Image 1 (tube, helix red, strand yellow):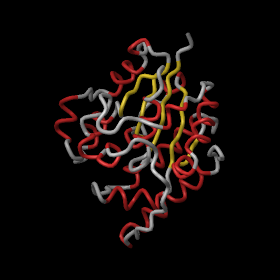
Image 2 (cartoon, one colour):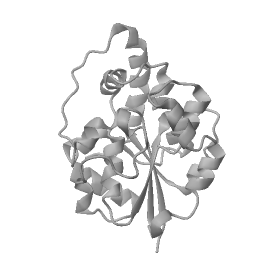
Image 3 (cartoon, rainbow, N blue to C red):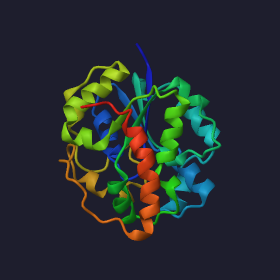
Length: 239
């Protein structure tokens, strides 16, 4: 049996948890939800909802988390889908361990990310949105890892999921288009703060352009993130 480890690298306020749901609907896949989150909160001191509970409940050591992610795939599954937040990776962190994973970048337009993020938390700097870390991953892997845009997936989930599976050399399963409503066992304990809309869903939402206005105080942030997003966008899998 072929064993695969998929590392899906997203920024915040994307469809990363919906993608996690999609892969959890496969019969052959084990799921991990943001394994570096506790390390990120401990290292940066950022005050996210549930911070202390997360730090107390999960491994906060970067190297220890990597070791766990390289263990045998649990539950006798052949695929290990790991939902990662790119902003959880520090610029000084070693990326060598990602060489043994099938990496993919999940991007979203910062015009949509920034207003959505501000509804949940403050933004300290551009690093909190993960674009620069995603670019670092792309460059580290010589621009050879697939990149997918949230809008493309929402406009045609079946087509894009089929293409993503093709890159991973696995078969698309129609079950990936649906999931059970409510919390799932693999959800991190932070789900109660961030996953409210997802818990109401049973499939990918219909794409609606975000018309929220980005306040002037975030214009520089928006410009910086947009430059990187546009660079990442050039390498995306086309619909």
